Length: 402
Image 1 (cartoon, rainbow, N blue to C red):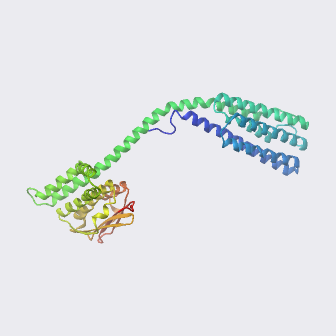
Image 2: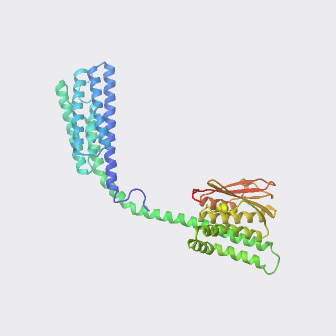
Image 3: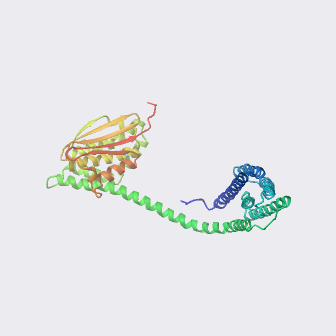
């Protein structure tokens, strides 16, 4: 298992992401410059600056096209020429009509110049990015100088624009080294993720084993405690042997191998027989079961769901014998539309669901987690001296073929 991007694809994908990021910075720079020019023109009542601000917004359409289309030198050149022309016009409009601005060190000019520098996002390789960034910086200074000369203003070196150029160059130059260092960490991360995955599988297996041990060991001890002193009766021994065999999954494996070679009708019968066996074992242990509904309603469940129902039903009936104080239980099987439900009801002493200790694994591990793991849900209604009802429910896909 790998964390993140595969090592072979990482350089290409990261280069594409960095290119888009530079173009996003360029878009923000154009937008901020346009807003500042419009605000300055509106505040001064200067129509020339207002028109220059509107004009600066048009390169944004070209930039939008660049961000959502394959990058190419032609589109980059078009953007550079278009934005440089807008920068010349904006510089001329501001210096010629706004007496308060005495030089080219005006923030909107710096922002538009930075937008030209970040055109390097159209390139994929470091060398090409450095070329386009340098070209953008030179064209920004040329555009500002030409605009100042036409307006008769003063051209001054802009330290902010130069600082932006240096930052872009450093970012472009250091990115490959950072990517190589991260790729060296990737194998160790992948190995760690494998260990985490293995630990998760171990925990899941441990829970499953704990559930089976709870179903067999504790149930057998409770059964032995209820028998008379002396040799165990034949039916008791057979019940214990059957439970131990199920712990080794021999019955489940044999059933699946047998049903694979038989027809659909025989297959469904074999699968549902797991539930029948759970009922028979409970009756052997002395429980009187009143069954409402038809076992055939369970035939739409999968193998895993049938196995989960059989094991959970065994635990529910064992709880009735051990804790309810009753020897009678009612089981209701209902298959309606795309839902199948199995409800176990007893009129015993009941209990407080919220007060069940964490170390009591019967309902929590052997019933609820087992059914939920198979894709079902469990609802419990219980109150002291009012009995208990446990519903296990599954949602199935119903076929129109009969």
